Length: 167
Image (cartoon, rainbow, N blue to C red; front, side):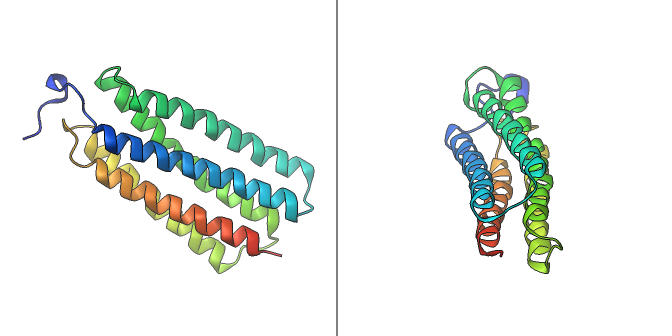
């Protein structure tokens, strides 16, 4: 039976926390890989590449802070803040993905919109899981967050293939 958050020693399972952190790192690596593919394949406006690179750098810093706060054993509130920094800024990924697609395409294709839609679904699942998991101790619904982030990671992997295959 879940306890009130105030009476709990560790709210989030360490293994699930590590899985979420690893998925977040995987998503960041895929984001940078997409930028690498763009740099190698596309002759685009330098300013636009710079803007996307800055956004990806900010996302990387947020991810590092999130992982540190989420995994450390610094108390329930710190872990909740870490989870919030893991899930909520992931919405920035969708904007970043759209920007990456716009760098290489004059007009987005249906495939591009489908990939963005797939990311939105993953993000919504992760946010719903976040809302459900922060109120219980120990959190039994962190797997919903993991499912949402897995969907986002798969969408990013497919987006890398999509960016690589664009002419």
